Image 1 (cartoon, rainbow, N blue to C red):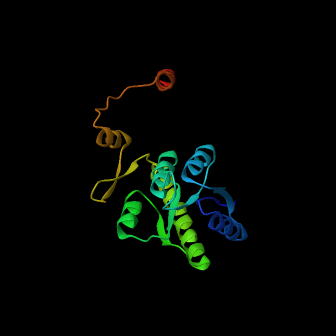
Image 2 (tube, rainbow, N blue to C red):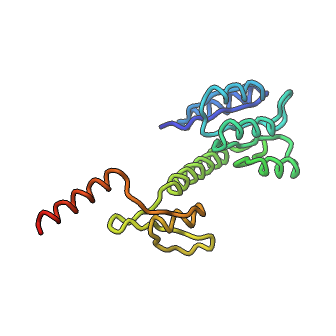
Length: 192
């Protein structure tokens, strides 16, 4: 599946040349000529990665970054700028930018950085999937529990629920299990 990239830049030459370069690398590329247009495109479509210029008229790259992260917290955002200032780099990274590059940037370097951003994004997605899986023993039905210190132990389901939620557990029968238990008792009585 081709990764989708949105490029946001108010310099038409950079916008188009970067778009052609990334399409040549096999990415599905969309272009936006300013921050407002970029945010509108982000609201209408899914993107794996956004490359945005920092300094643009109207909404700047940091505003595009903030909006992109509000729309999709998992989207990777790379800031490109011709005005490399430590303060703007720090702010971009604090807001969740995946990378920060100075213009003009070498195409090989940009491709390498994009590949690293997309690889990191994929790893993060896999970790989130695995975090949503609850390991349960197929035989005894105990649940693997990891405490805040990283220690693991296998707990009975009721112990696990109690520790995770703080709820007390009461035991009883659901209607199906009650019916089965009563049938079993009746069959045992018949055998005697």
